[in-house]
Image (spheres, rainbow, N blue to C red):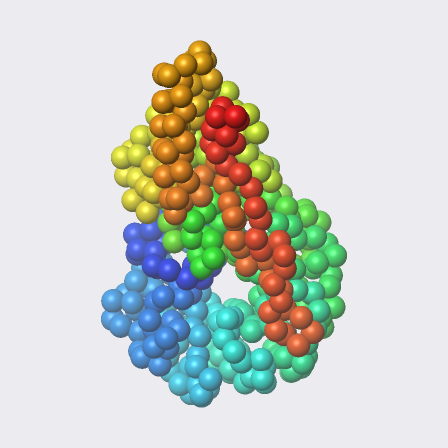
Length: 405
């Protein structure tokens, strides 16, 4: 079976527009992607109001998505409540199937139902039998490499065609290795996991970061041991495209950096990507960028960028431009002779830098960076990892402090 390669719109926050979904399916088709999964947490009839029938507009949009591009399947997700019956779930999903969707996904992530494994299994089996379509299941225990009573009950009797999803060793992973995959397979009766890869998503704890980098840290060898990869994007659809294109290149054994470079330059986002990177990222500009680099970041055209990828990224563009302007001021100050003029310039620079650092947009590697680097333990409960918080000084703050010192 071909490796599943695509996108799961599964983040918290404002869902994508219908136009962005159609455009992303076009992007998938043009880069050998084959699946898009509709599962936005904030879509009311996906999760909170799961019992309500999909509206005629939603059903029409599902049909549009399913018929958008040959070769790209569309799966509709649902998070049934704890008292959901099989008949209710099948009746709810039937309208999406009738609209032409090619798959269905049951999402039990981030719900307090570690005692509901048998019900989750039975719902997935029933949906598979009712429609005969590919079915994905996001379990409540979805991270890590250990088993749990929940996973054991879930897997016992689960239709072998139901794909069980997994985020990796943690909720957000810097790496996914062969050992990680083998551990998960051992915990799930040797089922190849379908990876719900939480990149480039920036929801929940990560809303101050903008993730524009390439797909990285995934061992090439795991491709033969998994069912596929679905990346979870940001609420900013088009700003997610560089990572998506890079991930699709990884899925087909291509060069992730070359694919990313082509897309990041096509969108005109290279300098913004570098300005919003963190020190461990592959697109990090280095600890001491040249003046020319600062000048290019300071000259970013916010209107052009937001017109292309959406106004949601403006706060990072503005923070990057203003931070780069501060860096240029610091470089100019370093050339001034000592005296009243230099003292006044130092004071003004310090005040401006303090105000800049208070913005709710992380740029130039500044922190603290907070991510859900959590995993599930032997009981299926979440355990936070100290790596969830990383402290670093931004390039701007470092330059300003060195200049003032």
